[in-house]
Image 1 (cartoon, helix red, strand yellow):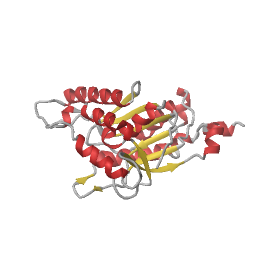
Image 2: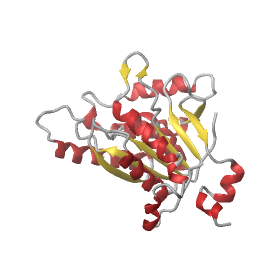
Image 3: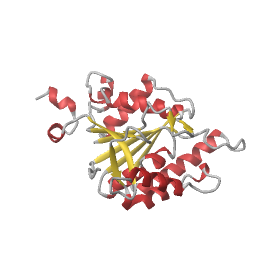
Image 4: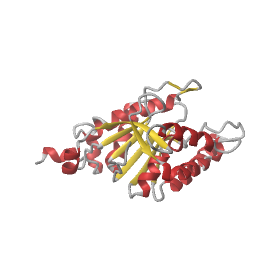
Length: 254
């Protein structure tokens, strides 16, 4: 059970609609209570519309618009960043790690949310997308140690982007391994409304009943009608966070 509300959060994902399936309820809850929210997407979902009459360029336009509308629905005023990696071809490269470090140092999120890179089989009906696994790996490598280490990617300091270490990482979990549940009961309708913005992905409308069922399962036994589940890694203790607010470089100048 969790009532924690960070000051800021960044979700790092692969495609438009990833956040809406996995953690939009948590983001909406935090935004409702004052958190700044940033969405960073490795791709624009350019091969995610299975229609040969729609080009990659047209798909990018459609899916970026859908993501911006979904983000605005869940978290009004949030920012959305597209990194432009090729959909279906994302790799956990050093270049992508550096680009994620740049975004983390720029936005300074208290919490970063991302995929579980170890999840290969999800339930018995889904093989986890390789882009999800690559982005999850690259995100975790960017969060620690790179973002908070002043002697890694030091050229970013020339852009004014000093070392910054997030306080926590929330890893989206489906099934085994979840240790923290966020009660999204008050924003479940918002989560579903955000998912519905991705109309290009659904022939017969967004699977909102399935999303509600998943959230109900996550809340079972926890006195929550609807929940999202995570494994949470705490990188900075409460005491250190209040003292440094994640700006690790400060420690070397005191």
